[in-house]
Amino acid sequence: MQSGPIAQSRKDANTIKKSRDITVVLGNPPYKEKARGMGAWIEQGAKGRPSPMDWWASPPEWGVSAHAKHLKNLYVYFWRWASWKVFGSGNRAATGNPDLDQEGIVCFITVAGFLGGPGFQKMREDLRRSCSDIWVVDCSPDGHQPDVATRILQGVQQPVCIVLAAKPLKKDASKPAHVRFNALPKGRREDKFKALEKLSLQGPAWADALAGWREPFFPAAIGDWATLPGLKDFFTYDGSGVMPGRTWVIAPDAQSLRDRWDRLVAEKDPAKKETLFHPHEGGDKTVAKNAQKGIAGHEHRAIAVKGDEGSAVAPVRYAFRSFDRQWIIPDVRLINRPNPTLWAAHSARQVYLTAPDDRSPSNGPALTFGHSVPDLHNYNGRGGRAFPLWADAAATKPNIASDMLAILADAFGEVSPEDVMAYLAAVMAHPAFTQKFLPDLVQPGLRVPLTADPALFAEAAALGREVIWLHTYGERFADVEAGRPKGPPRMAADVRPSIPAEGAIPGPPEPLPDMMEYDAVKRRLIVGKGFVDKVSPEMWAYEVSGKQVVWHWFSYRRRDRTRPQIGDKRPPSPLDRVQPDHWLAEYTSDLIDLLNVLGRVVELEPKQANLLERILAGKTIEAPAKDD
Image (cartoon, rainbow, N blue to C red):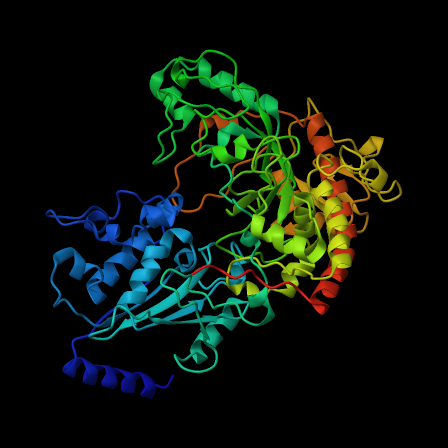
């Protein structure tokens, strides 16, 4: 190993330190979600002074208060301490001392949520005001929970980044920092290290990030992608899905929910009842809490849970994950954040589009659809947004933005809200869309290739109706004449998944299975001691942004349903362990429905890919102008 470069670097550093007072903080801060109360004076303030973290709290008018909880993380506390120590960030305003002017560098490798998360807007604004230059290195282009061999930090499943932020003396706070972005190559960790060895702070490898004060630290959209309207341009409202705050109120079968409630009601010890109830950290739902309002369309009980000895509020179907229909107890006393807007507009005509928000799809469809009120993590288990088709339960007020409907009406004549939702399904709910725009999706935020050709729009709207019919298990956009009868879709008889008599998945006294495997030679899905034939490799491997749908569906119905624990999260409620002791007939029916749906979705993908290419080859409608 040659020591010359290191010795020269040390010599240069000593020369600078002799002539200038520069503070440098380097490190890999710990990552811990839900770290409320662990930030000491950075979080709580001291000696009558305000908390430095208050400086990074977004004001209410920004409308991101639901995301403020993400600031309660140890790595964010370390970022706040470093910016306060090195840059004097927030000190001038907090102390009233205009002479506080410091220069220095902060360089951390941390999880990457703050780069684009909506709850970190004030943090990004403050760093832009404090610093002159910020360099961002995306160390996890492979996405969330990638293979261990691809991770820079092997034990960290979340995306991580290296950020170097520099501030000179007399930095003009009215001019935002120049933010540059670079992503390491996908693949093995060794290749990422080689790329880091060659990386310098200058050169063409860096792309300029968005310049707005609160914008994500990601590159701006460029080329044709930048001209396309955003997905959010199509809707008046989008919101988080349901945030239960406790997992025991959701199950793959309704009887488990009734049994869990009965177990809770039967517990007479107040402390044990509270443990079973499992109060959400930072939430306000407890066994003693009364409910002033209920969930629209469902029974409301004003009495607190601790005094309720009745049966459970009737469970209803729930869009838990993409293609995974489960059940939930629609009881406002049990659900931490039910999102009343979604429930109030629910009806037998409602359709919910779910898509990622602060991250981008990595493979599979860029968005999915459901007919039941969706979970916060519906899309692929990692958050996102829900976009209802209708704004009211009567399905008379479309949630499609009026200005978008006007643009479409000018181009094609009258266009129905259903046409718009179906168009989005045809163009974006397939893997070819994600693959086509993967380089552009470095910056989170989906955009829509909107054709200007009336014939192509009509073709897409027709195709998209079939896509939504499949995603909703035949509950929406049914049309017998178009070959879409109401009810679970089925593949053609000669390719339809089936269970022969000898392959039946056994019920009692056989316990729930813990194993699911796939035999590609026999095209057979093996579930414990039973099996399903005529299952294609594409059905088995089908993914939504890295989540293998069939395997994850099974993981919620097998004997061991415990989830991998990240960090030192508290254990779940004992009520989670209340589940069937054997495989249920309805599990088999749901599995057959799921495989048929996936099989038909895969069959449609070539048509969708071809349609997308023809749309992109022709004239498209540009994004509507934004008001200043």
